[in-house]
Image 1: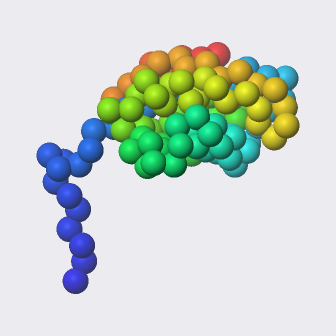
Image 2: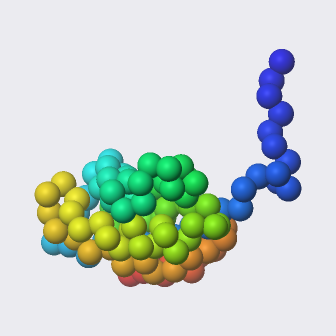
Length: 118
């Protein structure tokens, strides 16, 4: 017997924070995930992070452009923006995370921000 998925009316609403990493070094997805999670937990604490439910979207991360997206709960967008902006180091290299925008769908994240960056 398989589990039935929740109907969309019962699922939590999500937003996608599109970010760009400013640094002299190129980073892989794993390094960025560790740094972002560390920053979220240090700034927000474990209890709030469970409500934010952050997820770095691996298929939206571009290593060459250093652009990616974090999926967060709709109610915690501003907290997630602040935690992302406070990420100062990735793998012991100084970085600056710029939030380029917030979208409601993956397709708009791709078309408006990720494909548009040259």
